[in-house]
Length: 433
Image (cartoon, rainbow, N blue to C red; front, top):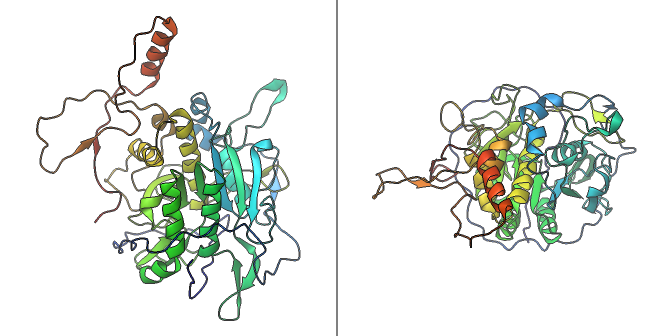
């Protein structure tokens, strides 16, 4: 296991200052994994933990769900295709409150702060993340369902409390720092894999100089590689300028865990017009973007958050939830193919790849329906251009003829709901070299 020279606190908050983003020079790639993954030790009380006198999560109200974002993502139509049923999503965060709209689909996975079950949340952050992931619609009179809240309302959740700005632990220099660091995050990732998670959401980020990140994040990098090798989709927030030591773009910093792009999907935030949010941290490791401003979600104690839930922390669960939908609809896909499908169907930014948007803004309907047509490719590859089929839509071996008319109907429905246009992808690394 890694013995870091200093502990690194993760950044967790519900709102962020609006700081303009700018182009960032390309930092070095992370070094290869050179350590063994953590043991995945059972969560227990953090040494020297100092708890707050009382938990004070953000205010809540009983306002309506965030219908605007649900409409943008076409969640009503999406849920006719998949709900995430059968997929376990690990929420590594500040804990998750057992909200009625999560019901019995939520279970505790452990608590690296107090040694509890992960179902306490003094900050409201993990509960809001969980709501965007998997909250069921609010029931309405007459048995109807209200507007969708979570993108994957059929998924199961595993709550792991790993960090909290409300709790403090001793720092190496004798002062105190917020509870939670890259070491416990690495342990939590391994624990989530061993608990059977198919998707892991990490709505936390910290920014460091590349050299410091290579040391402080070595164990985390190994844990993420362990998750990738176990066929788990890991999704992480890109980070927010002004929090988690993330400074102005151009400072040469890298964002953890997003820097380890080969093992996860790093997510930036966009506003209502799909333009990059001013706080989203750019970088070549950013893969895709999702709504991250003016959201509403579940609150501790019941009800919903007040408006103004902002941050890449809340863009990440849209992508993690989409991964759960894809895993349900295409169970034969590997974790890498799930990620490729999300990237391939994202709405591209106007000027090629953008360091704040990656491959573009997620399109859940396209991710669940896109089927490339048969392409007649040149006999010889064209110099500088390579093509690849959309992951998960490669031709399958011909099946034996069936006399059942239902097979014919099913095939017709698949073609009716799939994208008619061919999807032609450039095969390129997700990280510029």
